[in-house]
Image (tube, rainbow, N blue to C red; front, side, top):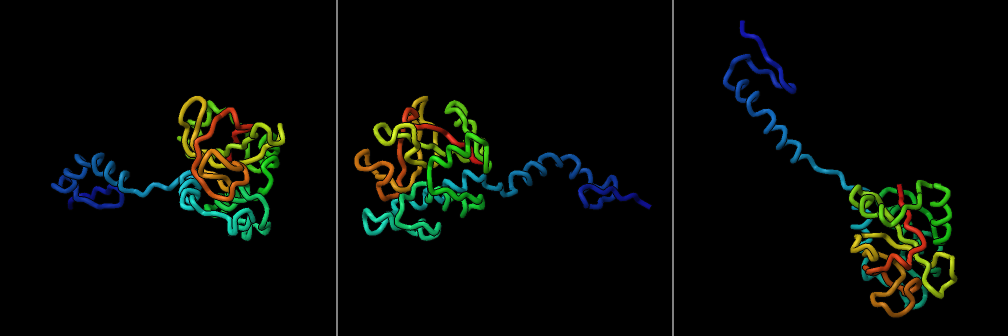
Amino acid sequence: MPKLHVVDGFAWINGSPAAKWFKKNRKRIEGVLVKARPKHKSLRAKALALAAAKIGVKESPPNSNHTAFGVWFGMDHEPWCAIFVSWVLSHVGRPFRYSYVPSIVADAKLKKDGLSIIPFRWVGNALKEGHVVLACYDWPGESPGIADHVGFVEKVLSNSSFQAIEGNTTPSDGGNQSNGGEVCRKVRNVSDVQAFVLVS
């Protein structure tokens, strides 16, 4: 009686043309199957996709700090850059609840809530590995030493600049960059950042 040869749950008669073909082509078949498997999006990819989908959303009426993000947070009519970050991360499955940027920096320094401070030279690798990185800005002339604003780091552009998606800023270089009323994609200078925060 011919013996059965079992491979990956399939039973073949040893020496049959089908069994020989499968053995010969197994690696190629497995390679195709691996490529065909859907890849799970990283937290960063999901967060940036959701943040980008909100580019152009404005508070209404102007200068009111009234947004759906603030309503969701339970703290409407308040500056909302950190609230926007909280809304995005929470909606992609990473609970995050901050309304005050200095609290993000403080917790990152203490490595609380899965946050940590990283040097800018590590940001590119962190992004490649799918981690969320936040830029916490300390604008010159605005409460020196206190973080004024926060956004998602989207892409490293050079040794001194990067692209970000931020809530409550302006689409131009004018106006109030940390309370400008709109979700925007921005190019920012590393020199304006107090801390880059890794979100684990």
